[in-house]
Image 1 (cartoon, rainbow, N blue to C red):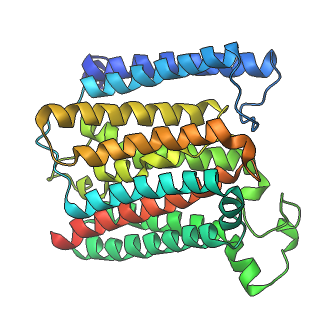
Image 2: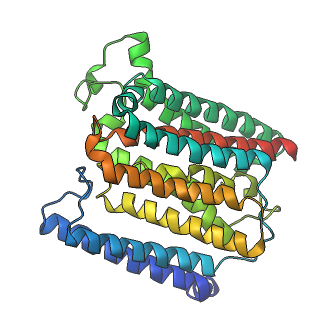
Length: 347
């Protein structure tokens, strides 16, 4: 035990631990000041604020994002050349283009942007469909991995299948409006009187969903390259999300307007942007393939967030960018499921 403790409190692990503590202290201090002095809830949803204090706060968030990302990046293991395959490159470009198209649809026709995001509309059903496809893919992959004796990775796939199935069913209120049935008594008093769990605590669940998706789809691949298990011999290596998944998922952090003032949401945006710049610098230095795809994603993240911060007052409903965020998340999970399945069935 003493040897394990000594190993933990040494080198790169200690540096990351200290940086996480410092960042957590900064965020906690900002949240406490806003709650007790400014009277703002931690999950305050309102128009973006750009007063002196909020600009200073953003600077501190950027500083924490840079510090965390730089600490991880400095600790990364030596990697071979990163070569994005054709399907991953296409998916990355597709994610960037679709995100920009969504943002410019809002600029040109805010009514169309609103109409697509309505309940039971194109965005909602596409989101649910992507979740169900991801769930089925994860489940098939789980059976395959169990058949090959990979029980731990199979269990991870089962968990991901259940997670994406739950997200999809919550998105369409467990088929309530399709099957047309009344809400049972236990659901009759949530925010929308619908059969879903997230409307019992909408603001908290939204934040957990968005930040959790950032953590799984974007942060974990980055951490795994530095500290993780991305080695072929590890039984979980093929089920951990990798860099292509992070790149496809990256634009989801940019669909913010009414949630821009929430510190974790803002931090997810800046950390993703710093991460993309780190990828670009490293890939350029080593002359890897796929540099322009990464550049396209980085530009998309900046452009989309800029559009909503600059023109968000023209939104029909202030929260509508998050409806498109909730489309990008399932699509990224489906791509993640596809990546895991491809590795599993090609082995």
